[in-house]
Amino acid sequence: HALRVFYEAGLRSLGITWSRPNAFGHGVPFAFPAGPDTGPGLTEAGKRLVQACNELGILVDLSHLNEKGFWDVAALSQAPLVATHSGVHALCATPRNLTDKQLDAIAESGGVVGVNFHTGFLRKDGRADRETSLEEIVTHAAYIADRVGVDHVALGSDFDGATMPQDLGDAAGLPRLLDAFEARGFTGDDLQKIAHGNWVRVLEATWRA
Image 1 (cartoon, rainbow, N blue to C red):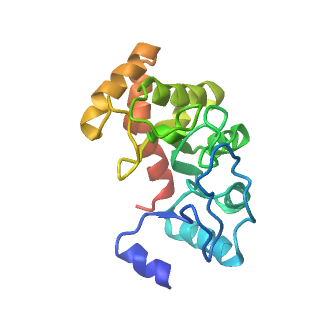
Image 2 (cartoon, helix red, strand yellow):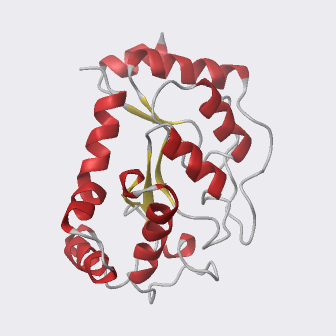
């Protein structure tokens, strides 16, 4: 009942956890280096929440959720899997990032990974340092595109409080980021998908008109 009230008020995207446990599941703690396999999966209430989100057409955001919870959502959800602001664990070993198997599962569902711009989730050394190149964002996106295809990677940002590369700053720096993608060899069609097209596809597949 409460979820429907929120839905009728406009809720269309829901993160099951932040980086702490709650009544629905367990979030990954902030640590480095560490993997996302921390704690149990979804609670029974969490499983019911995923099913209710599917029924209403609410996007379930996998970012911040631990690995067992991720696989519970993957088994339950009929919608594309989405991590709105995460990175690649193979490139930066924080539990907030996704393993290769998680990337594969997201792609197989038709979903998308929004690459997080927080420097502490981009750098191999895990440091939150503004003197981080925009190339680090491109490298995470390129890894995902090479592994599962450009249809499954997008911009994830996380501008509200995270440490951004100094050459990006805020949303006004996005054209510089797209230039960095182009310099790496991404085509105009690729950039259309990464900048907005992949999000539009997934949202249309998830939300109810």
